[in-house]
Length: 242
Image 1 (tube, rainbow, N blue to C red):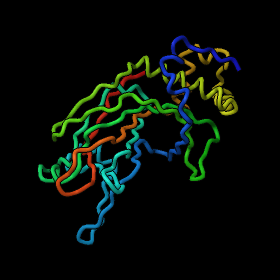
Image 2: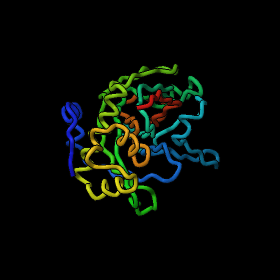
Image 3: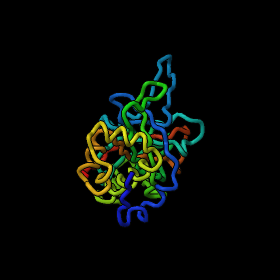
């Protein structure tokens, strides 16, 4: 199979080439994943704090990680399938100043972009569609202010650079999984001779088989006065077409 190496891509995203493929199963309709979720029983009632709370427009309903300790290393993965130019968040349990103070808040985050592909017939043991992803870390750490106001952050890669990241991952996918790429090309009627130089062909593969997401990982926290649960109340993404 002919692989056209695009100028500058392998240098720009050299860290991608050393990353392992991450197997990521996706059920129909899924677009948001948390590495853990807190579930607790209060007065006989079970309360959960899932990641969907981050996009409900209500600062009183946070996502809360669910592991022992302060949650360092726990993450959110948010499907975008478009270039992520920025994001904002409301830190902590922002329902009230009292709950904000009692629970952990984010002090620093690690940001990553995930890019990858599936192929016809790639199904996991749970009957979910299976994607093979590469992760590239963007900033480490990203410092977050200890306050209940909404905070905004830029993504340090342009839309063009993020599109180039997808191209780099496709080159890796073609080299490591040629059988799956052959199936994708057969299904779409594309040619492997022009795939790596024709942006329209890549855009079609991205639309049909691609996965592109932002991953936010907790690195450090501001300690709560009473509880060791780390909370985020809201998140929103700024997206642009590739």
